[in-house]
Length: 603
Image 1 (cartoon, one colour):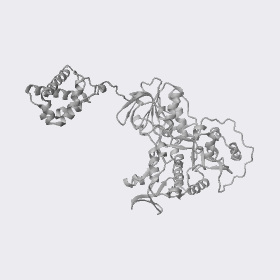
Image 2 (cartoon, helix red, strand yellow; image 1 turned 60 degrees about the vertical axis):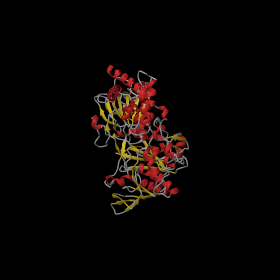
Image 3 (cartoon, helix red, strand yellow; image 1 turned 90 degrees about the vertical axis):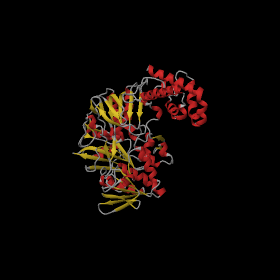
Image 4 (tube, one colour; image 1 turned 30 degrees about the horizontal axis):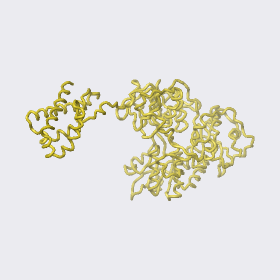
């Protein structure tokens, strides 16, 4: 290091001599040198010992192989050597090689920068949550509730802070605000406005500050993906090779939207005009597409496909956009609803301005004359500008191989025990968890309420609660503000069903339900409720008729004469009762009597 300091001093002396003897010649012959050299040299005079046009000598803290400072020192010594030769031979080096001064200028490191601390990501965190969705946020909130000083790091490959996904296919599409894709704020059915984000940025702390946070906090590392998990070493590697160790870890990686092989085989041009709907960026992209094309075709007749069809259908009345929905079933949500109710729902979707093509199996897709041509197996041909594939979700289990975690062969997802553990210090929650339901057997659930409850329970167990997962999660779907339903348990149209319906009133809509509860995400208010002794309505139940107008009602799904699933059709805030019926697991001789517990016959 002493040699480097001596070289610095030599260079300093030579530069001063050059200034005294030859500056006029340099600047007259090369004006560029006046521009480059003077600021560098004058700033050096402020500190005679260490001019700022050379870096301050210090030991490198870079890992082996970095060599950034070593290179600077080598150039510095070389420059000093050349400067010494110049002085001895009295040759004007700068007239013949002005680039030397330019190199010196480019190398300069301000003294302030040399002493400022560098902010780095924490190399260790007590609680590491992989995934930035609902389950992770619920877990973080739960951890902090039980351990107020906890330091929690959420790592997500999305560029956004944790947010709720349901409004992406529901309320956001009905907003009157032209800037909704930027604000991501929307009016709920009850008229109240809220943001799609669970919390504002001020709720979180910077990841770089997590180590030094005296009272702990929740930090979110965005746009970073965990690509490798070392279970034995209790550490993960990010896609930029950063390693972070942990004490306890939650995997809440969610799912990846399924595509169709026929679309993937159709080539890059077709995929460019296809949306796999899942994230905020997909909502923004599809909204932009819907304003610039003449037609959109949605492939898929489930919850997401039907919600998007209704949302885009309503827009079509103003913009003239053609909205087509195609699916292999006979009617909308045909895998969930009994046939008569599926048919009724299909008619409702049609009234929203959607052209329905049922029993449609896609054979091929091609780009022709600036249009996408969808050839169906029965010979029908559909021409459209854009495709939305809403055909389900694949659990994201990318870390299973490196972590050595078990993936369920039947349902997909990471297999976990009743406490949502995959290992002693690793938990899984949300869409990616395949858990054991004490009442209904092993399951995997892909709904918001399950993400909330499983994430919350995982967070509790990460702080030592050791609670089993017994909760029967619910889900809901709205076909606009007027028709909606809530469901729980196994709702499969292949099971026997019994439906009990009544005449609906103005209060039997999703809009009215949110006005009463004060929240647009209904599961957030109902998951804390418990049904104890429900009181049946004294109003006699009319005879069950499958007529054309299903205003409101209850549909029971049976397996071995026991209720395993319930749909509340335009009946809201009664989910605790449905949960208790499934939990009891009893046979019921007359389900009309059971339906009275939901008070559907009251005005």
